[in-house]
Structure formats: C-alpha cells, structure tokens
Image (cartoon, rainbow, N blue to C red; front, side):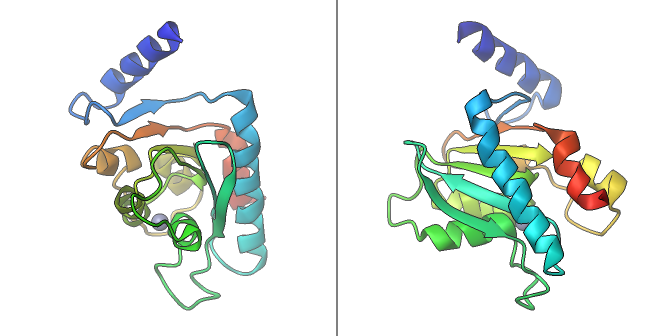
Length: 176
Ligand SMILES: [Zn+2]
C-alpha cells in the first residue's frame, strides 16, 4: 500500500505539478474494480446502439453497492447535457451530505461539466477508461478539452482521479 501511494504521488508529479494535493492521477485499479468499468463500457455500447454518443458510467458506493448507472442520451433526450456521469449523479439523487466515499466509473474521461457535477455531489473517486486525448484521436468530435483531474483540483475536498484504465477496451466502443 505504501508503495502504491508513493507511485501515485509520482504519477501526480508527472501529470501536473500544480494539481490539488488531493487530485491524483494513477493508472491502475484493483482487479475487482474492473467489472464496474466494464459495465460502464456496456452502457456506452447501449448508448451507441440507441444513436447516442458512446459513453457509460457506473456510480458505486463506499460499500461496493451500485448506486446508479448512466449513459449518454444527448440525442435520445434532445439535451446536450445528458451525459453519462451527470445522468448517474441525478439518478442517485444524493441527499446531503452527498456521495462521500462514492466512486464514479466512466468509460471515457468525464468532461468538465460532469466533473463539476460530481464535485457538487461529493463524489470522492473517479475511475475513467479512455482519456480525453485518446478519445479525440479516434473521434475528433468537438468537445471540452479540460481534463477531469484539473477540474477536480478545484474541488473543495480531495478527489482521487484514476485513469486511463483498460484504455484500449474503452476506446474500442468508438471504433468497432
Ligand atoms: Zn460530460
């Protein structure tokens, strides 16, 4: 555990030396967590099949219970803000004090809007699959380029940002 924490600090230093001390970027998760991320990828595929953008998200409580799921529905809903992570936060309907201890697993790195929504809701950890630069490399659709960790660095409490994880698997939904 000590080594893992040290590695996280190292990753943070390389990623952005100015980031909030709590906004850490790492690239690995426990094997047991991968199933949540793979479920997010399934939701991304469902979104694509429905004609929406291929993004999915799973919100998991500190006890490992799935609190909510979300997928992109910008076309289906006729709402440009109907993003996977935002929809998952809304579906969870967190009462104060919010989602402290919860982790958001997102197939793609959350955009600035969704990152801010998670910060408002108190989400403590974010695990994302494909990074924004990697997604833009295979899908040049216009979008916000601000990174999740940079938004979370401005959160009023420490947020751990983990990713990219299983990136090839998460990118495949954009290309296959
Ligand atoms: Zn978003």
